[in-house]
Amino acid sequence: MFKWVLYTLSVLLINSFGLMAQSALTVNPAVPLYEKIPAAIIDGDTVAQFNLDPVVVIADRIFLTTDDAMKYYKLRRDVKVAYPYAIMAEATFRQCEETMQTMTSESDKRSYLKTMEKQMMDQYKEDLKNMTINQGRILIKLINRETGTTSYEMVKELRGTFSAFMWQTVARLFGNNLKDTYDPETEDRDIEGIIQLIEMGQI
Image (cartoon, rainbow, N blue to C red):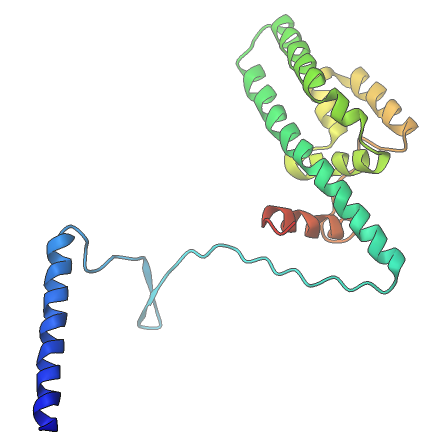
């Protein structure tokens, strides 16, 4: 009796799998049963090749003192404030470069830059005025990170050497330097770690 029950169940399962397979093929006849992927032959073996997204590993922070913890969380707050403006600055700078390359008249370029400057001042002046000195310093570094050039060089390219010199003088009065560069390996390692967390949606 047991053998007949086992046999019956086996037949039912086989038929069920057959019906499921037929149903799948009937419902989705256009779905391929296999997919071609890139491969390479290494030492006589065919090895599949896949492009994997980068994985960022960030260790948990361990603070030796309360002061260290306070400094880090203050830095994290300041980076979160400055980072969106660095992204905006990079996009605007690239837009200005691309637009000005289409212009041959110097007067048109000057008029365009004045228009862009007014738009940015109207939109971001109050926000930037409310930044702390440290947030401004971080913003200058992050602009270098995003654009590959310093804030001083950006002003110089778009407004000329004299304007760059004047803005650098003003920045110096407030304890900042438009020529600051970004060093993610040493000096700005904590800032880079915070940005990675922001980009991963962790903070």
